Length: 212
Image (cartoon, rainbow, N blue to C red):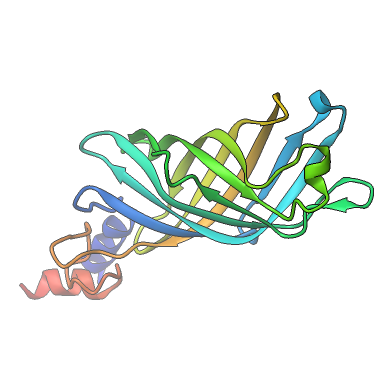
């Protein structure tokens, strides 16, 4: 039992090792951390606004061998905000601009990444376009974050900052996001410690070692 205990502890403490590149799909989840935008409209004569992220998901691809990272997909549902009294955006959706590629770096030791991309904010501009807020509105930003967790489930915490523009006037914004992921391994991929290849690290793995 002592040998099994040591093996389990060793396996659980090791980081996942997967064939590269690794694609993780993560869902934004406010129960494990902050999920909101902070947009500073002071340069436009407005004020700082906070926009809560209520749902959505993204796909992040990392390649430890090459030290690269990129966002493959991105979608966020955001609560409406009132730009000026009586003029609301309605539900907001943030996606990636499909005509602009994402690129960045990844450090497999610290599990940190930094990626840049162009995003599009889509909203109801029926009234707002009268004051220059037209949909979709492009945002350019850089996402910095960390990947946490071992086994098949983990979390990604990120800080995004960049700028957008309205009628030639730029404004800064930032976004704190937290997401959960459950990555899938292809048939030819492996994860350190998963001896039984059931995609879960548990007591069955050291037992399988002792049975060999």
